[in-house]
Image (cartoon, rainbow, N blue to C red; front, side, top):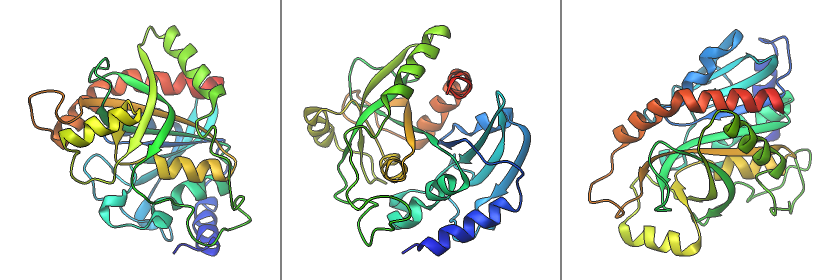
Length: 272
């Protein structure tokens, strides 16, 4: 279990290496790490150097904290994340978000690559997360509450801030970029869902399904951060098309969507 002291040690290690406090934190999902290359005065710190951070094992997740300016805003970007299916506790998994908040970030932009459940969506498109379904039976807030971070029973009626969703849609229109909006379902992985499970997930009201994002968003909201979730729809979920799923397909489609994704994020950061 990660303690409050562990969080402070990680925060203090990073603070000694930077001159500014980040205003915005960004989590860059599978194949979406190139945004950090656009930062000015870039400082990169490997996760492995930061106390209590873990090194991601999934392909497409380099495990680097990148700090620098984007459109005049000081940003802290996590190039990659670690996942529940890798065997980490949810306390360990959400530590980087806790630390971003302690460093000063007031907004979290969390991104992922995921499968489309809504059959009107297409691979390569983006989706703003309006709400989520936690289908794992677990929650990162279980355990002793750290009162310095947030309340014991936080409200969850607006995890993904409407103000930020509206800004994202406005900026997508400026870029002439199709931007879907929907509900994201969190699945533990590492196996992809079965066709029967996808039918269930669609019946429950989800438009996309993936193996991340929900725990980080819950923790960020618990700490009073505004949250914007953006999914890159890299494939149609299991059973929709007559083909098997692969992680390489996820990385390939995310790589192709990287340019439009980066432009959208950059415009959003300038506005907020």
